[in-house]
Image 1 (cartoon, helix red, strand yellow):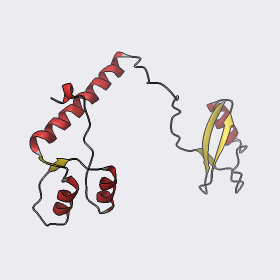
Image 2 (cartoon, rainbow, N blue to C red):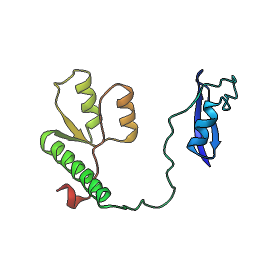
Image 3 (cartoon, rainbow, N blue to C red):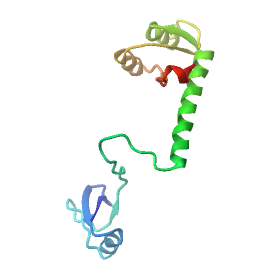
Image 4 (cartoon, rainbow, N blue to C red):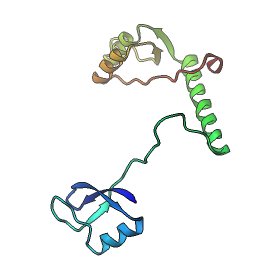
Length: 142
């Protein structure tokens, strides 16, 4: 059985179970799939998130996946090094300094430092642009 999220021409969303993808296509073409809200027969599959198995760490099953994981790790390391080498470190004063820059109280410059989650959320609500830096094992960051 296949589970599909469905949507009618009027935008009503609902679920349906079918024996196969072809089974859905045949029933929809014949007008047998109907919206439970408005009875529309113009029904299509909606975009669905993929089903992901719960629990445990996913296993890398191929060399290509292992290479992709390594490449992402390399990119995160490169990003962190770039920021550390080219941005001004402001330590625990990150939130205050980001606000001063945002509101024009001091000249623009690229900064990085530490802040609490609560302070970061407040900055975002104020329209201050920020992004977390990847945290890496010390041996990879240096």
